[in-house]
Image (cartoon, rainbow, N blue to C red; front, side):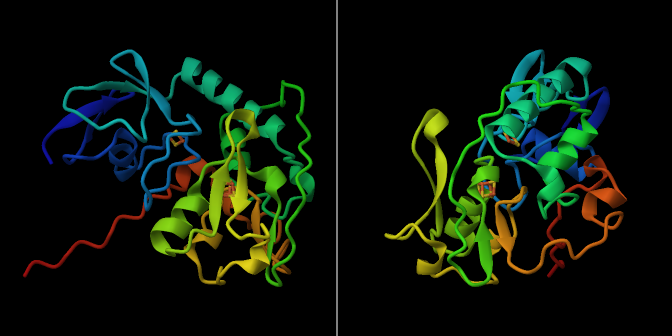
Length: 240
Ligand code: SF4
Ligand code: FES
């Protein structure tokens, strides 16, 4: 690992094929992100991870690292843009955190705290998508979906089930359940499916598990999201 780029003035080593966010996370540097997850192919939809590379805006989750790149992430201008993106996500859904059981464990909320987003700024859309409570153990509140597609990728690539999908175009894009009835109860979803673990917000919820962790002990009560990297390196292979 000899090639490096600079991130906010610091040298970051990288391996061939790594993206900027992967190399940064290996060094413990946080670049805000919502649709990136180290275990899945990047999706490039949320744009929170946008950095400047040699002065040009690029999504760090889809941009390969190359030697000598000058990458800036933690600048006031980029964080301003990120706050605007967060505001758009907040008003597009019904993110009423005080009554959401994901509060304190939600990446959208934690990122907004970390970046100092104070108000929604835009008019709320107030979507009215019916909750799917058909499954005995799982609840889906589609009004909180940020269309990151992590559940879609997990169900397709890990569970091999295609339980979730994104449907529609533009502002009409929405998460759907892949059953003729559209109901989760009519899929082969199982409680140990990866797709049930990955939602960064409060859409996919286990019934009767809400509000079990006291305030003060939830994930992002204990440490800000910038100190909770979701990068989990694979264990090094033992030399033969
Ligand atoms: S349900 Fe959650 S994981 Fe799936 S697309 Fe929506 S926000 Fe992402
Ligand atoms: S994390 Fe890169 S676009 Fe969402």
